Image (tube, rainbow, N blue to C red; front, side, top):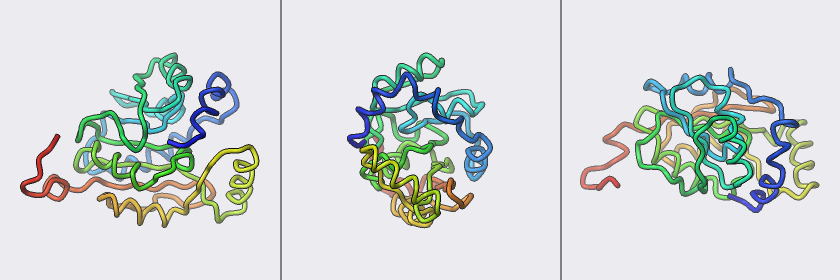
Length: 201
C-alpha cells in the first residue's frame, strides 16, 4: 500500500458518510466475466467494505492496511483482516473472485497487487477493478484534486490495466469505459497457473 494508508485510517469514521455507494451493477457486470460460480469474494484495499457490501454472496472478506477502516468493516458485519494488497494474507486458490473498488490508484505497485490477486483467485475466477480514467475531463480534475490534498495517487487507463492483468496471468478485458471504468481479469486454468513440477503452498 502507499503512504495514503494513514490518511484513510484517520478518515475512517467519516468515510461512509461522504463517499457515494459503490455501483453494484458495475461490479456485477465485472463478476459476470468469471468462468465459475462466485460464492467467496475478497475486497482488496476494501476499507469499510463499501464495495463488497453491495454484493449478495455467501462469503465476503475485506483486506485493508488501515486499522480504522477494518473496524468500520467489522461494524458492518463483515469479516475483515489486516494486510497489504501486494502480499495478501490468504491461501492460494482460496476465493472465487477479488474486487478492487476505487482504490487501485492508492496502491504503489500495481503489478505486485495483480500478481497477489492472481495467486488467491481460483482458476476461472475473476479480479474486477473499478477505477477512474485520468485521460477524461473528470479524470484530470480528480488527479489534480487528489494530488492537491496530498494523496500519492497514480491513475491508469483501462487499456493499461488490461495489459498489466495479462502480465499477472489474468485474461483481461475492458467491461466498461468512461470516467469510472471497469476491467476484469479471469484467472488461468489450473494447468496454466501451476506448471508441472511447481509446488503449491
